[in-house]
Length: 324
Image 1 (tube, rainbow, N blue to C red):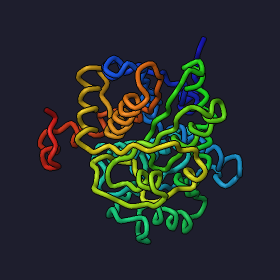
Image 2 (cartoon, one colour):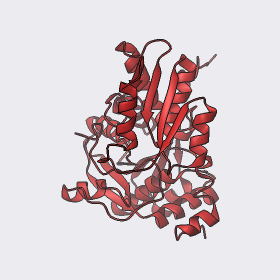
Image 3 (cartoon, rainbow, N blue to C red):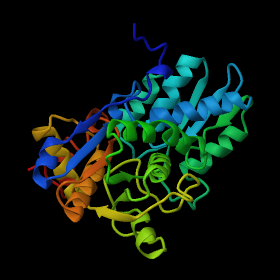
């Protein structure tokens, strides 16, 4: 019998899905790693598990302890699931700009949720910095610190990268992913580049993020804004330091939304906004490289967590966007 013993053992080994409409249009094999099929519903389950198990091994997370994190949602959801499965408490500090679906999901899972104003990272009350201070003031608590904690990218170096390599039989020409903490992009990039240095490693970046300009010019500058959640950054995180990057592709919201709705209407995939950024960038890379190449990206999470936003016609209209 093939049985997964508990929530944690069900994380990973997600399939690669050929995105037919985009592959057929470009002449490339554009493949999406179906991370929305993790038991907690997103790619962040992997990092959450590695962060908690690393703290357990080091003896800093003890029975009955609390895991504290500042998160835009998905890492918090993964942490809350795993805390429930392992008997820990969970405290999440989240910007009030995140979708109601994610905030309510955290509360349903039993996490203590504190919403705070969304302020830049340089502000001492930024949700990430605030979560670190809160954890330091509690007894028997750890700060997950997903942006700087290298257990994050190790999760993808040891699991996601090898899975992609095996699933493509090593026949992969490009790896494309957006970054928030940088863990997924960096871990997979580091593994794939060790296997084949010729694989193109491309950052997909929304407007309002500084990573595109950093890759292109070496300087972080911010331009515009984006409706996407949980991706983009105004700094280089610990997880992104030293990650191999060949280029970056910047995707505006209009292109992202077009891709999200094409995935829904032509490929039958109900995906979140960051997936739109990822797939749009993969399509652009396919056009740059030409037919016959294989490009892999991440299908980070499903669309249900954003139904009141990117799947709501009236909400999109307030952002100057349309589903038509």
